[in-house]
Length: 296
Image (cartoon, rainbow, N blue to C red):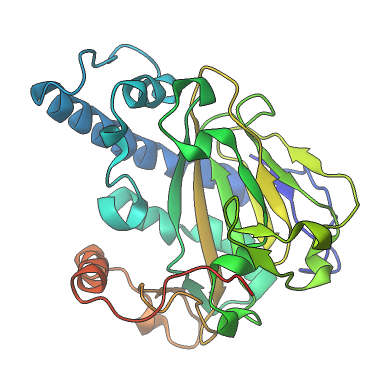
């Protein structure tokens, strides 16, 4: 397992492009297997439900994990309903959010008092030829600061982008604009999806970050990035997780955050899976706060 990209803005000793292995990241990869198992089970259950409802005709149960979702989606867009961390609320996923080896890679960037941000997602990018998903056609250039409230602009948030299958130029890997993290927040627009206003885009050439299952891409909130269309015959799967120091604004007050590491108050660390589920249930049943994107 490799750390593919760590911007210089985080820490002086980090190289801008790094492909060196860290021992704790090899252990992170092992923690992904139960997460992938949960996703496979979820997809299998949804497929069987849709077959019973006569909304699909083929379960495609014999094909690989990175092929099946796209083939099912081609038959019905409903296969992906509820397929995100906050809706699925599965125990292996909850455990992975607090994975100690993952947190060990984040701690040098933001310190030992760490909150799991409420902005956390499973990303499934099916082949663009299969249709039924805007994700398949790529994601425009943006900063992650744009999906948080303005009040969180100063939050030292780190995005951990972790592929669950091989991520290549062909199937829509991430692209970044090098050195863009030092530009600060750039104004975004809604047209074409949340995207940096075109005239504010840097002129520097982009870099495509191809990576293997279980690699980690670490980005700060100002790195400009996008993803390419998926022109392969396989789905590109990934986790999009975010962490930040305790006490800083989460930028998403409508959704719950929780402590995953603390030296000062270890008793504040959330280890109760049922409590985590209740936090999300309460957030959806009693809406409050803000969950939108910035366009200023």
